[in-house]
Image (tube, rainbow, N blue to C red; front, side):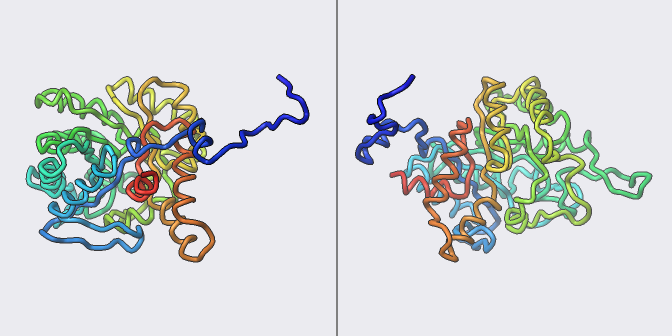
Length: 330
């Protein structure tokens, strides 16, 4: 289609009209706020690496949840900071552990908020890996994760969180068969209506540093490249997502978000399920660091970043900037 030379190709109108006809419109309902929950009462320990965030005791997390609801945010995802760590991450399966206590408190304070619980062991193990270590080192002398033993603990962890009132469990350990293991365990425990948000394409990314500082979950040795995805691969992401869908995932997620917009778009085109993307701690912290130096407008850069993730095809966006952007949108 061609137009006369004098006809404008862009809409020349008020900001209100431009917003009305915008192709992509971000809503607080699409956002998920991460919360780090810890033991104690009245605790709010600021996280230096993630400006504006803190480790929160259950009562403080509940108060924060009520504010999220007021802003129109639909969901929060919980990450546990346990009082102790051991080789098997035993507090992850404690019915009175930090996430279970926080979930119950949040449901009392803000019953309409969707509560998602991250299901992994890295926050709970003293070695920082996402699963149970194999009893013996490999022939090369390397310690590896025992996939099958890890599945059993992840399944038990998911049931504990569902018992506490979580609406969604989100397996992030990238263990083979984790979605099927969780679905079977949840169904056997009577939690057929608890949904699974699968970290389907979770890359071994350089952008996770601030989170690992916040959760004290950096690996004590080696790295996670043996079970997280190679950032150079895209077709692998489709295979991983297909496996999770086949095993019973209700939502599939890509992590990190901005370096993987092409993956978000390909998964959106390939699957009919809701697609989530995680705007991770490093992505968020970079914007704050640049804003502190006066190089970018913090809220403008956050809004543009989250809009790009939504435009690429993500229905749901997990971001440490969720609350700030919800306030800006309002």
